[in-house]
Image (tube, rainbow, N blue to C red; front, side, top):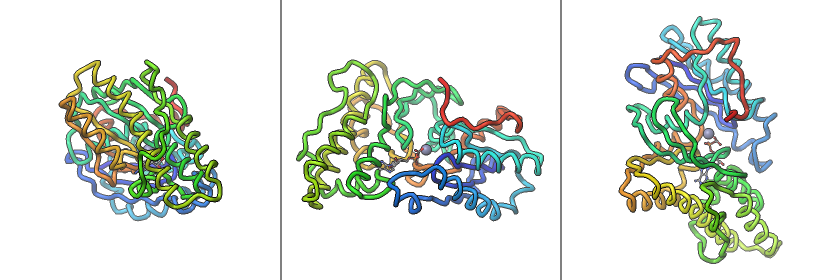
Length: 329
Ligand code: KG4
Ligand code: ZN
């Protein structure tokens, strides 16, 4: 079995996965959403302190599995360096004390493997990764064989939902809140412009759209009603998703995509899932999504990716493992 640890942002999570059957034997996640909510976003120092408390608490529950472990897997990049180091330090300590190899897992690859929890991996696939830190379209050909074909030039998709929520004082994380408010809103009321509509670039940009929402909120000032907020959320969500789909359509037109997937925390968005399902229907592609519980950060996806690493003996010397806030291209 592999014990995996995830602490790249605001979720402390540990999982245990069986190498031969891919079965998830244990999984626990402690989220810090409540603690960060008052600040409208993740406060790295606070997140690190909360991981330092939560990770050992969870680990305590896994002690009975220690004799059956074959490796320790840990997210080492990308993420917040002060929180990544909490997981990596725990992995090093376990590696030394239990004499086990370490598998370093890239968080983004972990999200891709959230599609294959308790099942065989399927490649090739084109994947849209939408999380709080990333918006990327990735061509996935096999284990660790991933090529980014489009990414955001500024804010990420999930982050723009967080910011829009924050500017209306709705709380954190903004994605699920904005999606919920949007259900009661009129998505056509505000005609925000779709980013990069006339640009040939296959890329994303969310800072301009976020700013359009901000200006609308300012225009209402303290007169803003609950209905105005719902309408802003609905109009923003429609344009944010239209932007994703507009560029994806260009990609679908350039090559035959048989299998397409959406991963990352924001892939839980039902409006997004429905819209991408229509796109896949149009181009005769199969749409793959992870189970809702594995869309947001978790150690199960890290463990699933590590099973592939284990089979290839992709181990890292515990003295050489380092945390990387950003991946060099
Ligand atoms: O993958 P994740 O848990 O953490 C990162 O790796 O960043 O993604 C979290 C992000 C947050 O920005 C959150 O607001 C967004 O995913 N998110 C959503 C939804 N649920 C979570 N965005 C839009 N709609 C949602 N339903
Ligand atoms: Zn993530």
